[in-house]
Image (cartoon, rainbow, N blue to C red; front, side, top):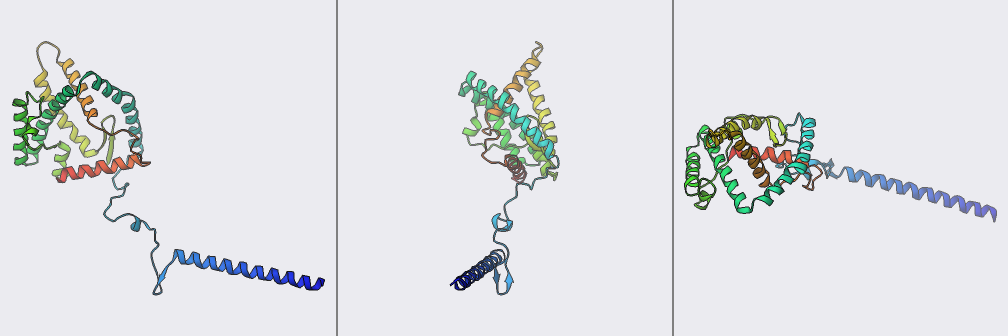
Length: 267
């Protein structure tokens, strides 16, 4: 009886080892099939390679040239703090002090002056049709629009264009260059950062001609103008730092800005 019980135990252990071996072999075979599926004797590509997940026509988030990424990220974070603690509270105060109709009038005035900058860049880009349309817009808003406070040109369906010297350089064949985050001004690139200078000089010259006087208050008027221009510019932008819902907000903004500027030049 003892010998028969031992034999039964030995047989059970052998059966267990045999079943375990078969189970391991099955798992190995299944693992091999999941990594290399064969069709007509040839291994196929893995199912989840990047080319299968990302459409070939979609630009990856890292496509933009960003050799100064470390510095750009620090400036981006700095801008987020300035925006949160300075600009947005100032915009809320601006909205509280000035009702919507007055803010709209201020916005229209700045837009009319920007149209003059657009006109200058359209001439540099040799686009006479667009330049004539912008000239008509400025003339209409300065006359029928009560010195630009009312956007009469849009009501008359006169096309509005947005051109700057960065786009002009792009039309001339100058590439965007490295991605660049400017303090306070925000995301840009090297070409557009350079292009800000002539646009700013032209706009400042126009305002100086309008606001200058012999009473000694020209600097004060310009300070008020710059403050209102900054507040109006921030008021019209809905973007809020770190509220996009994406863990890759920096890369996403970089891609969107780079793509937008390419389209601005091509349009």
